[in-house]
Image (cartoon, rainbow, N blue to C red; front, side, top):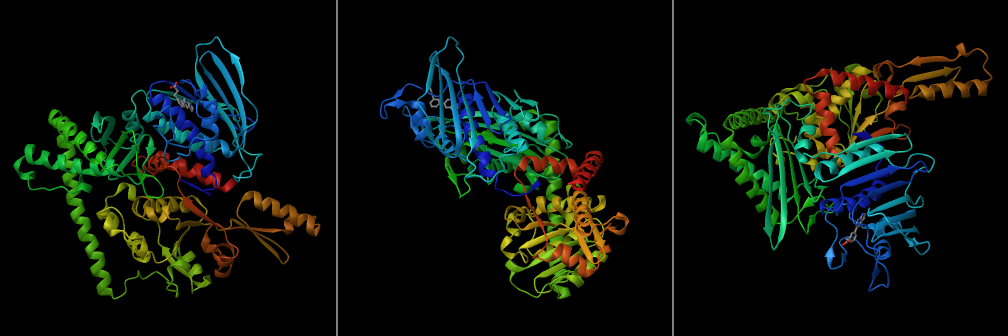
Length: 625
Ligand code: 0RA
């Protein structure tokens, strides 16, 4: 998870689009080496050792095929009567669109004993290609480009591409494309990394579970292919249960991460539930036979990758991250039913461990349901649905309302006095909230601080069943976390983010979650008062003051460091942190689900060392920013 803006998304999609074309060459069996180079002029190069983009004359257009691909053809465009795209589709805009969005693009091709080079600018060729005879048998494609700064908003002086964003996608592609070795070369920071996973998605599961305690040693692995309307559909599934309670199922269609799932996911889930229940029925001792598992029981503590490759993927929804092909449901379901049942039969000890876990999940689910009913009943009796410590705002329009979740009663008190009562509600939290990564939902729902948050926001929680969560009932469209700028404050902030990420994720997806940004220092010289959010800002303000007032003795500038929010008086807190006109908020967004899942299990899991390290590192980083 990082905090920032999404303006760079499109910029990175340019790289992913070109990369997808190289991955297609690898998936088709023609390339086994793909390299991404960040150049010192901030351009990027993507190269592969595939067949090379065709350079022969295109009969319809009367010019080299590569020119046609670069200037006209769109994604899914047929070439030589066959669709050459396998991966992609999400970014799926095609090379001609990438070309149109670049200040310059250069393509270098080796094939047919020829070396071919051509440059384009904003989508149009600059000149005819440079063609030379080549004796090398090596073939491949290199595409380098510099994005158009009239279209994308970036500072040309700085690195344009975020190394981590691109590496995260490359790692994912490397797990899904075990045929190829991926190399990332960073000429700016002189760094080089290699991603090559012969074990494919099995290694992916190992990576996902590396900070979790596995329940069984084997990774259950299913790899099958099916005929569907005369073409082949490939299904690859890897799964492993861990001792935790979170579920991580990543689904892919032609290497696209289908974040909203789709038919491959529903096929997987329904077959998993069915297979587990029929295993209990058939193989478990009598006393377990009357346990009927729900879907969520069979997924507790499960990490799974479901990857399908199909000739003509159909995507639903505007965001294109939900697979729609109806035939895939049955195909994935069949893959699980046949292979998982067989695995369980052949590995009775592992099977027993998994089944006992699912049964205990079922018991916990029933307990959680009771706890939830309890919350509802209590609030009905209280005749006040809202938690006692919530100081609510008077407006009834959620779009204009915000709630500050404030660390500590004293800061809560200042915030209550200072706020704008019409729009701003305050919910003070006492001490640390429960670590949701280590507890099951029934325990989580018994925690007072968490109950207060759930009731105040009004949306319910995800996890027992999806119907329980509804974003339409959100009572405040801005939910703002406000913690002290110290290690404890940072820890509480992390605990809250984990809770929202695991149990109210749509809040993040739809941009409702924020972190407040209180100042760290106050500088005072005579009547001139300034607030600074960082060490650097403090130094700059001191310099300005010295210049402006010709100060000789810097001791005359009084500097106060706010150790906590509680040290600010109500007016101060309002003016520096809460006033909509002057404050800054950090919006929480996440870019790569995978990174967050691993980050949160690392941060909030059993082992405290990584957590301490992260908090201290990140804390000092925030401080020095
Ligand atoms: C069209 C047809 C063929 C390959 C490609 C495009 C191709 C595109 C890219 C983009 C990056 N690397 C690439 N490698 C190949 C098939 C050509 C044939 O049949 O020989």
